[in-house]
Length: 408
Ligand SMILES: O=C(O)[C@H](O)[C@@H](O)[C@H](O)[C@H](O)CO
Image (cartoon, rainbow, N blue to C red; front, side, top):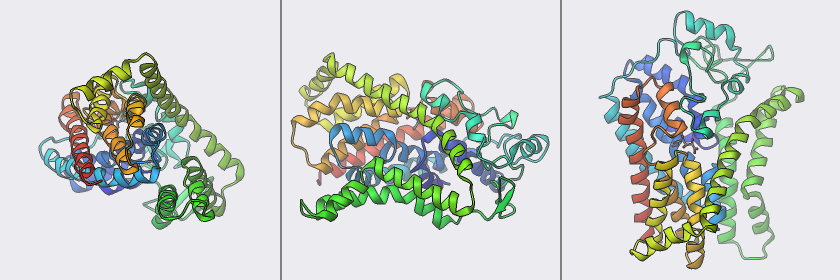
């Protein structure tokens, strides 16, 4: 489950990853007969790590832009620091707490035998309509408790493909997927993995090209162009549309409908990023940012530690990881620009900001409520499991960044 969270976490926003993967966690927990927490934690750690540490997620991409560092460096440093943090928080802590906090799969979760599962099957259809109904991201950006989170009792919250009324995701039981009345074989894992990897590979290619090739080289310029996040993501979307849509017989009208529906959660993400950048600019213009960064430097804190602390304070105060990252990057931008840090060093500062942004998810974080509702946990159990997981992910990620800092 952890690896699934890591891989699927690369292209999707944290909260949406939960909508998509929760049914798989239910299946694993039912089959394994152990606590839901044991299966949910590694997956959540994977989603959260990629959300905070890795492009193309909006937080690290915006922070990289504000601090002037190549995305490839952020990927390299994000992976270097994020993987150990995921191992400790998701794998070790997940196994530890999963044996102690016993939570059952909700009886009416997708795939449950009985009336609710049947209702889901009846209303399911396995199509792409479900996410739009769930308004993924709606509760995310607003931090609204329970917003966008399941009311598993209604049987209406399953992501596309989950509402099949079987324990498998759509089509897994039969090996086919229903789309517009036509049964087609599901795409291969290799193809999906390739599509997920494309933006990362293009972004890394740009960084490798900019380091390894001489200025003025045509290939270098092409690689840098292709690895610009907006271009890399556009290429990936077009590739996905072709390989998963056109080539498999999806009509242009259907593709256009799916694309239109995808814009809904994107709007909320843009609002979160915009709000963070706006907040950061206000703090910068009013001098609060400089005062904060200055006083931290005055007490002798290295910039990487100030970055972590400011981001952690913002996260605890307002909840959203993305807002914390973008705001902190705005605050520390001038301090970072005033020194001549190398690209790997700035990437590590971004990692520290990212690590701070996920500390102590609690009641003001939309993700807290989504985790609590989807994984059937009381507020107390969510604090004991998820809040601690996020704090471990944060502290280990920051410790790793500090360690790597000594060698770059
Ligand atoms: O706005 C955001 O970036 C997200 O909503 C996060 O805050 C998640 O809820 C989660 O906490 C990530 O770990």
